Length: 281
Ligand code: PAF
Image (cartoon, rainbow, N blue to C red; front, side):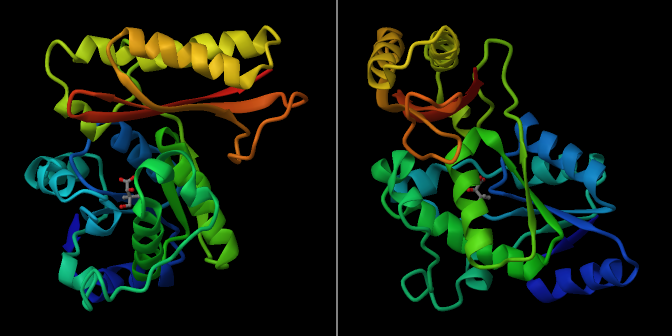
């Protein structure tokens, strides 16, 4: 596995693969890799001859300095997992490489409307930070395809729109959420849960499944369903940030829709957990 810290070092290897006609799949991450990330890598290996993974804890997408400071950094373990998984290149840029003019001087990519909803409403500037770093990484890595987890549904929708709006020549592939046995979506932030909080975290996925049952049974009072589901989650001791039923493209759902996504974010102790469930009737 090649480890590259600059776009030039990565380009040397990637150009040779391109000349040989090999497709390049890219998995951008912030490290602290878990089974969810490894599912992206596995899918990437199925879809392309070469796989590049990046690890960069992107300061632009953190709305709170304490959240950035305590974000788990586990590079040695991550590197070992990626090597064992047969990844071809690990790209490890530092902040000066990504943002040479500093954070304040960095040109930003803003995807309107979608960036202001849901997580964007609670974390101002978060999706500008995500869109900006992903756009830069795409230019540096120049992949044929890039893979993102469906757990971050809003992020996936925003990246698809950015790619379409900016004519970026990369195919975006969504990969299903990987869950713990009790349904909790895998996330680096699950590590913030203590022993008494951890079992209660599964209340989010339980509520989403209950909502799916109600939608499939014909209920269409979206706000009423959302309020009942939020109460279920709060009964387990979480504080709900939002719970909404929307179209998969995050448009407002109408009574005639038969395809939805239920999206939730909730606080449990120090962890802000997000999850979603696609439902078709
Ligand atoms: O999903 C993530 O881990 C991050 O938002 C991403 C896409 C790597 C950008 O920093």
